[in-house]
Length: 149
Image (cartoon, rainbow, N blue to C red; front, side, top):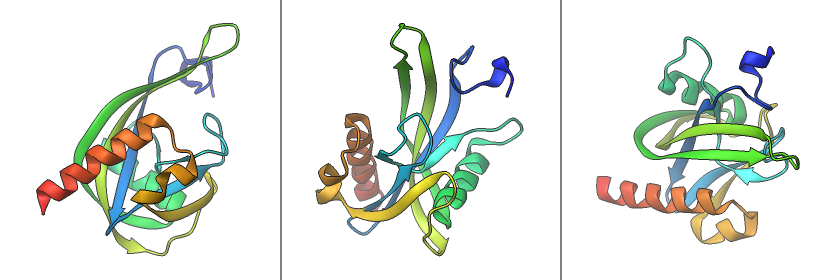
């Protein structure tokens, strides 16, 4: 990766997509295998590659991380994830578009970008130490899902 497209210490924010995949009263979480957030539970997703649409990137990332094909719904939230190094430099800066999604097909299994993947009841999210932003996005997605039914 060149300095121009490096994820660590980027020269500009990196566009990413995330999926709030809802099934009944559960959300799909992945345990991140790589920085940032390595070892933490979060929503499946990743970086939009050159030439991909947002939907193509989201479908690819979810399939790679979880083994599932998804139905992509509306945008839930657009947020920034900025992480600074101890010296104050921006180590990571992602602009993340999170979408409400539903599983369509596939067999749940974690891929190389995830150490684990599992359905988690919304009431048990606190047991997975998700970030405050993830919790807020999940709540907003659930409200959107309720309005759609």
